[in-house]
Length: 84
Image 1 (tube, rainbow, N blue to C red):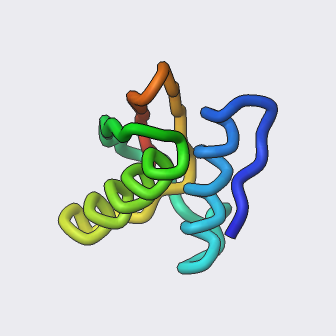
Image 2 (cartoon, rainbow, N blue to C red):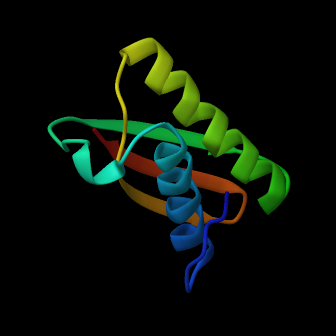
């Protein structure tokens, strides 16, 4: 699984899309509802892990899949909206 982008935020969104692609075709996931997600970590590598773990938690508890992500990374803090 890889996330690529011109910015760290784009790479994190790409990693989230790749994770969804491991489960299903992201193109078949609707974007009817958005879920806010925030997390913090001491470095970018741990922030990526926290971000993906937060998505897994939201998918499990809300019984949703996500296919679109609007991610902002400022320092060690991530704010995102995930649509699914």
